[in-house]
Length: 340
Image (cartoon, rainbow, N blue to C red):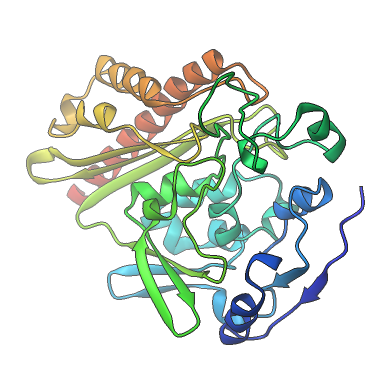
């Protein structure tokens, strides 16, 4: 299927990109790596008059440490993320999430910003123009119905980005710029949790950086996901876990963030609360299982992806259990290493 006709824009600086975005607004789409939007262009899900590539804007690339935080440029590739020793040492789940996306050839092109801001998906929406015309317009394309949930009053399309759960678990922030100003906000505030429009950015606003605060004290994290075909599929269930150990081996902070569960990530607070405040060495298999079960209850799943919703909810429990077990194992390893 051919791409629609558009004018290709290739600025060299952020200011030049922002100027073009401000000028063309709704008629323009931004390309980072282009791996996600290309499919939507081919299916005519978007048909912009202008496509703006960030490939030549070198200041948006790279990973650097700044005081007590790590800064990742929005067009840094996923391969660069997985190759970073700093990220592997301090933010294991972020490194893991990037390394699980698609195949190496795609990770060499796909970017942090593109993965974070990828559109939500649905079997009834991500179809050819002909297939969509037979179904009729849904909420995602300006209609007044949901084909996945009969009688549904909103869009139930699913956000399937890998990086967001891991980034949110660390309390990461996003830097957004537009002509003449910028703002910095927690990653979670980028999301509207409305499938029809999953992000709250203005058309002329550009994501430029991801800022990760370095955890204080002993901490560990892990990310797990399930796909049918790891090299090309989006996750059908995923979980990111972060644990921070305080005094006397007590778990001072616990965060469990679910992906592929609704139109944005899901924070499994009740699940995390079952282990927060407990001593690390007091955790037992039954505690982990209870936490995983509560995480599954926090998930949202409807029949709009390739696997049934009931099975995807069970997968949430499995992914949470695996991620939590690995995080606990790593945290105990950090504790032993500090005592050695």
